[in-house]
Image (cartoon, rainbow, N blue to C red; front, side):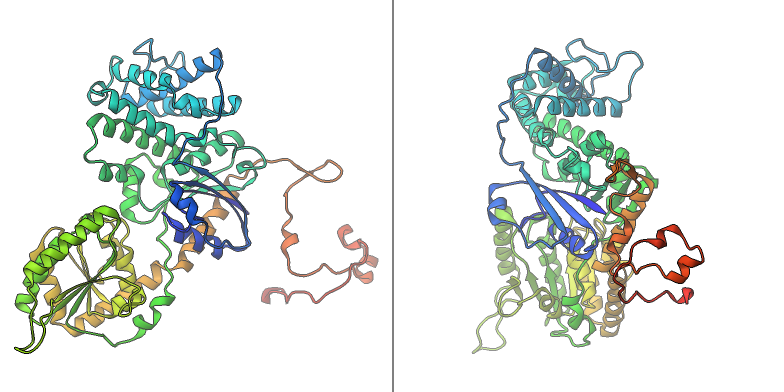
Length: 573
């Protein structure tokens, strides 16, 4: 098969989202060809370059989302009218304007009332067809006419309250976001020599990455598959809490409508965990289309630690992850103060790098809090003081790799208040470590009874669970062994690749692309590439004895140099 892999801000770039699992997928399915269509998020990401690509990546095409390329397309009067109609209808749906409520924002469909989803789809594909006819819409989406169209929709009768309260800065912010999100409309990826030539479009995330797949399906009939390890609408709610209400409302409406359209058009929608799957269902995904495919993790770096019964320090708690406010290290430090009162010899190792400027500021705050809660202690009158809390990063002399961090303690702790799929928790399980976690995101689903789970933002409960495991080595060993067995069964690269391979076959068998492929004589061929072309042996010449008995016509071809045939299956001998 030929797979069109659609990414946003990730593979094949050195840094970004969904980079690791995409790379493992492409390497693991070496029997298939991949065409990568990547949307980059920043100039820095492009300057970093690509990771090494395997031979089965046939081509890579990229487009930037961080800069606006002027397509120099000047729309004529008729095209401007079409743009105003389609973009006006899109804006009307986002603002909650009923169909036909205003002459200024006209509906595209006359007669019977269309559903909100149909109105959004008609407007979206109308813009896509206009972009294809005119050679792009970048200039139109950035124009003053687009902002005025959005403003008319916000002021139209029936618009919801947040939209009616939008001011000029809000309108400019929303228009700018829509322009960036709709940039794939102006790309030349949807012809027969582009995404039209693949068998399946696989979007590696929701949001803008899905749009090329929707357009390929609309223009050429290529089936679409969507994979999400985090729903974009949920991310919007978490990352824009301080945005003006109008901006939050309109952008949430866009993300929700785009997600519903993608789920409705996709043949299969996969979620990385049940928590994400519930969000997909709430956003309109059909339960019959949903599959849960857990992230594939490389278990080999953790094998030695996981199979060893040794523990570097039975009195040490370990936290591993990105340092940011959502990880709630403040609650962890307060919980550790209670642990120290009951187990004075216990130490806490916080291992991780800060995530951006906000993470760096949060790390500084945590260091200050640790110094206040735990003044440096000395073992004797002539020894130097030492703090029982240490802040470290993977890659140093003490912790060269992640497995060393988990091996350095008896219990791994997760204290997050927001979490998707807890990768650090799965790594600790592969290392055979007992865990104490907060009940957020997919934690309970990942743990599955092999660790202790407490409510978030509850330092006392977190401390009690840690003390219970520190005082019971046998229980720690049992939980650690069960955790490793569960992780090897569910969260490895092998199961991830096998699941996607099966889904690809399911999609191609159920929704094949209807292409007419002709042979040299102009007759249609059933397959563009016959399956026997990949058999690793040469076909032998027809046997004279078989021909004399009136064998099949295909066996009477011209002689071919014989080679050693492949062994026959057991049942055929």
